[in-house]
Length: 97
Image 1 (cartoon, rainbow, N blue to C red):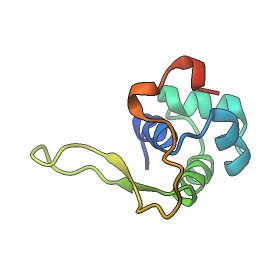
Image 2 (image 1 turned 30 degrees about the vertical axis):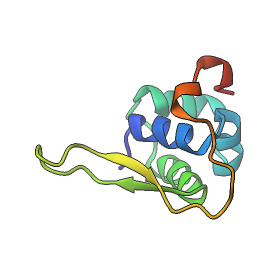
Image 3 (image 1 turned 90 degrees about the vertical axis):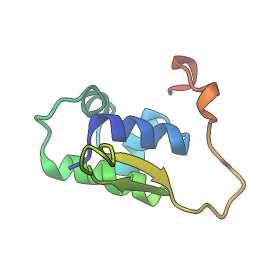
Image 4 (image 1 turned 120 degrees about the vertical axis):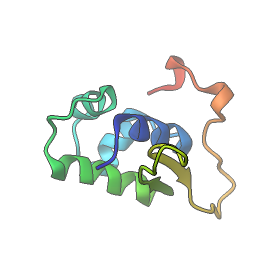
């Protein structure tokens, strides 16, 4: 199952706001905020809906490796469009939604 850090990272990489992810996944905004804080009480179908929406937006989720390889992560699939989302140095609470 994907982690809170992976969800936050994937959303940032795609430039999606919480509201956009909620619309794409069919999951309420409050539930996504809870998932991003690391609440592990969410039902698996809820997490899978969020994961599917982010994968559809171009994210690949990377499973946890051993200690030498690092933990779970995310990366973008090869993009065919020009929109690159928000650059990491421009991420802030102001453009979070």
